[in-house]
Each structure stands twice: as C-alpha cells, then as structure tokens.
Image (tube, rainbow, N blue to C red; front, side, top):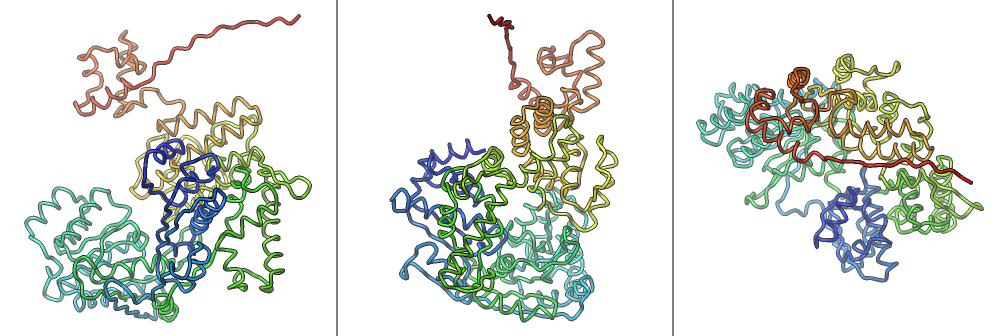
Amino acid sequence: ETAVDLKFLERGQLVLATAEQWDMVSRRWKQRKNVQDVALFVVDEIHLIGGSEGAVLEVVTSRMRYVASQIDKRSRIVALGASLANAKDIGDWMGATGHGLFSFHPQVRPVPLELVLQGFEMAHFGSRLLAMSKPTFAALATHASDDPAMIFVPSRKQCQLTAIDLMTYAAASGSPDRFLSGGEEQLKAVIEADIREPALQQTLLKGIGFIHTGMRPSERRRVEALFQDGIIQVLILPASMCWQVQAMAQLVIVMDTVSYDGREHRYVDYPITDMLNMVGKAGRPLAGDAAGKCMVFCHSSKKEHLKRLLNDPLPVESHLDHFLHDHMNAEVVTKTIENKQDAVDYMTWSFYWIRLAHNPNYYNLQGVTHRHLSDHLSELVESVINDLVESRAVASEDEMSLSPLNLGMIAAYYYISYTTVELFASSLTDKTKLRGALEILTASNEYAPLPVRQYEARGLENLARHLPQRMPQDAKFSDPHVKALVLLQCHFSRQPLTVDLEADQQVVLGSALKLLQALVDVISSNGWLKPAIVAMEASQMVVQGLWDKDHPLLQIPHFTKEIVSRCEASTAAGVDADTVFDIMSLDDQVRDELLQLPPRKMADVAAFCNSYPNIELEYEIAVLVSD
C-alpha cells in the first residue's frame, strides 16, 4: 500500500519500516521530497547484511548515501549491529570516520556471558536429540536455580516432547514442582480459562511452558506472559521463533543447531544470525543478572566451527551480486541508471564494491588491481543487463543506453521479481481461464520461499482431493508453488486448516493481490479482454474468500451455506432475500428469523450491509456516422 505509506511518511516525524518497505518507498526518491528530507537514517541489526535479506538492507543504505550526495544535503546514518570482524569496511562504506566507528569484541556485553558448547557423537538427528534431553535437565538443575531458562529446539514437535521429558525427569528426581515459581491455584485458573492444548495444560502445572507457530495466538501470548511474570521457570520454543519473542532469560540452552528444510529435503544449519540472537537472550540487564549462561548442544563435528563463530567477531560479506537484477531494473525505471556506465557507478556505492578488493577469492576475482576490479564490475553489470534485456524488462540501445520497458515497469511498480513478470508474459494467452490464471499466479517467484514442513505433503494432497479444481498432473506437493495453489483454493472454499497452514495461507494471500494486479497489467498490455476480467474476478475472490460461482450473500460476515439456503427459500416464497440490499430492507423480525444470529454477529452483518457500496451507472450509446 504505497499510497498509505506515503501519507504516513508525510505526517510522521519518526518512521519505522523494514528494509523492503523503505526500498519500495524510497525508489522514487526524485519525485518524493519526504524521502529527500530524511535527516537521520538508523539501520538496526546491520550484521544481517550478510544474511539472506542482506541485499535489500545494503541497497537502501547505499541509496540514502547516494540521495544525500545528489541533493547536496547532509544526512546522518547510524548503524547498530553485532560485533563484526570487518567493522571498518562497514564504516568505510557508510562514510563513517575513525571517530564515528565503534567496534567492540563479542565479550563486551551489558551482562557477562558464559558460553559452553557440548558435542554429541550421534550422527542420527533423532538419536542425538534424545541423548540431549537428560543433559538439558541437568543443566537446568545445576545452573538455573530459581532463575528463568529458555530452551530452543529444532521443531514444533520437539517443543512438546522436550517439555514432557523435563516434566518426567523432574518427577523422577523427587521434585516435580521444581520449575514452578508462582501460586498453583492462580495458575490453574489461567489454564482453565485460556489454555486448550492438553499437553500444555499438564506441563504448565509443573512450571514448564512451550510455544510454537502452530498454537493459537492467544495461547501463545498467555504462555509468554506467564514466563515473563515469573510464574513458570522454563520456556521451550522452536529456533525459528527466536526473532519473534522478546523475553530473555538467565540461562539459554540450544538443543542442536540444525533443522529440517522441506524444500531441500535435508537438515540444514541454523543461520549464524539466528544463533547470535539465541545466544544474546542469555543475561537480563534490567533484571540485575550478574552473568548470563548459554549452553549449545551440537554434533561433535561442528563444535570447533561454532566455537569460532560465536566467540570471535562475525565476518560479513555482500550478497548483492546474487540479487542484483530486480534492484538494477528498479533504478533503470526511476532513471537513476540511464546507461551501463551509470550502472557501474551505482555499484561503487555498495558494500559489495568495498569487499571486492579485501576478499577477492570470495567473489571469484583473479586479482585486486584497479583493472581487475573494473573488469569484474563491468562483466557483472553486462551479465545482469543482458538477463533483463532477454526478459524484456529493459531495452539496451547502441550497446550503452538503457531504458525501461513495460514489463520492467510493472515489476518495479508492484515490487515483484522481474522473473515473475516474465513468467506472466510468456504463460498468459488470450484464452487463459481461471484455472490457468491461478496456476500461473502461484508459480510466481514470490512463493518460492514458502516453507514446506516435514511430512506436510501428504496433508496437502488430502486437502487437494476436496477442492473444486484439480491440481496439475505433474504436481508435487512438496513444491512450495503447489502448496500456494492448494492454500489459495482452500481460501476460496473456506476450508478449515491447521494453525500452521493458516499462517502460510496468510503469507500467500499477502502477495496475491499485488501479483493479480500485475497480472491484469500484463494482460491489458496485450489488449485481451476475457483474461483481464478473469484476473479481476480472481482479485475479488481473494478479497471475499469465495469462488466466482458462489452465492453473493456468502460475502456477508457469519453467513453460512445454511443461512443462504434459508434466504433462497424465502425468495422463492415471495420475500426477497437474494442480495445484500434485500437483507437490508427486510423487517427486523423477518431478518432475525431468517438469519438466526446472536446480537453481536448481527451487528457485524449490519455494519457490513450499511457500508456496502450502492453504485448507479447511467450510460448512453451514440452511433457515430463518418462522412
């Protein structure tokens, strides 16, 4: 919602945004004076520049420096992050002087940290986790005392298993309530009122809580509150949630450092940025902890590697070269880049340029002379431009000048990948129907990162059997694009889903509207009417959560197929109740008998009906006869 963001930007003095949001807003900085007026630009977690999302962080920071130089206006950039091995390179890239660069060793913390790594020989993942259970309980008994402890585990399933293991070990030790700090009667009242999960009810009574993404948000918030208020002593959560939880503890235990990746069908190491975040949760400055303690349990072969990563400053490298196409396309569209020389100059503002000379092997350079650097940059720009030209996003004239084409402008405007728009242009035809449009939509590059969990494919296949539209014959349910198609159809069919799949469905729907708008633009560029109408109807389907052939009354809140059946019977009997306006015009008594909804739900119905747009269209047809 760029228009809404711009209004906030105009009214606000302090603007909080993710790197992607600011990238979208600041791309057209030449036309947006509010972007030019930014006097202080604060970048938090600058060490994430070495992670998967680092390219966007690098681009927006480089852009703010570039904007300040172009409009000749001083602006201040402040970057905050973990201890970095190459902090001086970050400072040089941002334009910080020696007086403005502060680099601390990892051991410099508000609360001293004792870090212990323990290796386990078992190569089998399940056996290794099983072997970690008893040492985890021993660590809690030895180091936690009465202080709070957090345990990070590889998966949602392991949360519950670990909680039950700890409860069992506590009972066997003769102190089953050793992790319970608050009043038991008060805790029972909270559990009866807010907690539905049976296993969680049992473990909470023993002072052990667990949370994961499969829980209801209200349950999750309640368990977190119990932990932060000191009622329960132990909180267990998946490592993937380390950024979503604000709580800290005196003791942090990391049970294994790998998790299953459904897309690659293998166990992968946690990102080092996630590891640093988990370790950083040990020690509470505001609670007066004298020291924090973190214990990392891992496979023995990874112990030395992790010891170096966690005890030494973190080296970060740029990955901009892997994500350059979309950023380059956006700069061509906004005319920041108008030829290939501009593209090379654009790269010299990046952290990538700073690191080329300092770590040439990492970037496949043959040497570090000015000639080597210049040639490497020119080859990179040439390769990216050629890809954009082949995708019909950019036009290159006389081997030098660059100008945006329609597909490139669509990709930049909707903040989607150039490969997605290329896919739309090559797959759509003048005969594309709804089924084809949905398959093309969910094949977008934006859905590639959608998580596919272990053993989830079978559940998706079962869901697909009950959907109106068949899946493609070669559909693999471990493919994130097929999963997106299933979840989109479930949204139209209002199919009940597990909490995990509901969260994934929200991710799918979050990108669906802008992708459909881009789809409409691509179709309109070809002058095809029927596919354009199909895409517009698909947008309505996403908003209303209905199929195009469903009864229009189902868009009203709390209306079910049973209520609609009663409305149809009423219409057949002579009392019109077939449209939203008919429902509004019914007598109150007739409406109550027809809908049979409680007052609170009836108020939602009334609010929807009263805000429903009533549009009258008048038109005249004139026949023009030429002389």
